[in-house]
Length: 410
Length: 148
Image 1 (cartoon, rainbow over the protein chains, first blue to last red):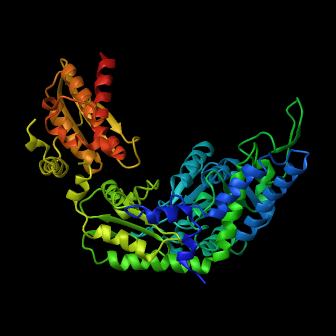
Image 2: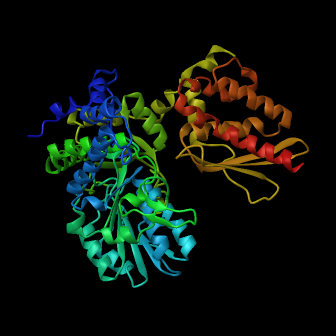
Image 3: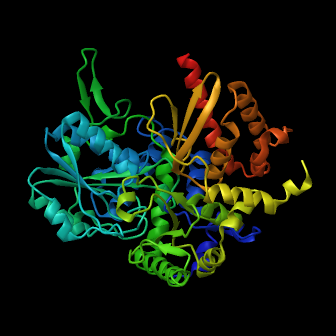
């Protein structure tokens, strides 16, 4: 039984936020999420009870922590439906996408090969590919999007051709929340002999991820956008692709042996990609985060988040001064503008009333031509948000004016 | 300064006016202008300021770009303040403006309409907005000096 009031008690930030005057309403969950006590405890427990390194020590405690760390690979593999040795821990989704770009794509792409992406992608899923294209002579192509930033399977089919070797897409866009039909896209991609890289930063926290059913080749996501500490993320890759892929970071922990002549034997995946001491507390925190999410279940999470989104959309629609950009998107992201008021002023005004949202282009700088605006205000929902919080957000927007925004500086 | 000028309603009017009808709001195709593109300051503001400096005098300043109310209005006011000033006068005005933004004592007469931002320093997250145009003109002046 999903009880949001009970869930909120697990989040110390929310308990404090409710007591603040004005009450703080956190609606920037696409940027990062709040942490439940169980995640905080996992981090603190590591530092207070077992703060030693992994994979090295010959003493019992290091052995225990190593086991706990490796067990998280199993947790993640269960969570996204893959094998434990297909889970590479990274510092986040950006690091994971960069690893695929430099470690895999740069190795296999030839001049005039095509990397197919969308203009709604986050900088983390654009800039590494620009660099790889520059280095290999491959070309970047964009698939068509409609004015709500939505791609269609038909449009994708038209954009796909024999030269396309890599397709890279966010499962859910961080600006417009559009959901990509990943399974169908993956099938079409494979029919052309290309591979697909999925940026799961906005989807893995909010909807069930099934990499094996979908047959995707790579998937990246960040822990901190799904309750875990910052500094940890995951790259999933099909094992045979991980074998082909090179690490772009070398050092302790990634090699089996090396000699003074420069002969290096790397470890097998996933270990060859994890040079240096990782964010151990982050990985242990990720474990607690996944357990927390699994206990609630994605069915309840999705239902609640979409309910809140639709509730807000229905009310905001009635305001003539609000322009909505993604009414139809089936995710908890609301992209909007207030007529005549720049996004930063809207965000500052909402902030003065306790409501935290993001303003700007949300790192998706290619999107402006599609939706005909340089910037949007983004409110992003997580399962711990409530209808009462949405009401505070909606009420704040009801009588917003340029004058009120400017008056904030007096 | 008279108390009237510190009336928030009047100051708000100044900002509204410069936001809705920004002065010198255009760019020019002219190689003799110095140009400063301020896009890295934040994720949002993307302003280009151009300045023509001749015989030690700022002959013209203009700007364009996408920015919030505070950035647009403060840059618009900056252009009006600095056109026709010698570089020394401009530097003094810029220095006084920064003092005001940092909530330090400053010369009100010198800043004219820019005093509309005299309280902006209390909103730490808006200081960047209120100074972006001034930072840009400083860059233009520096470039001019380097060229000399």
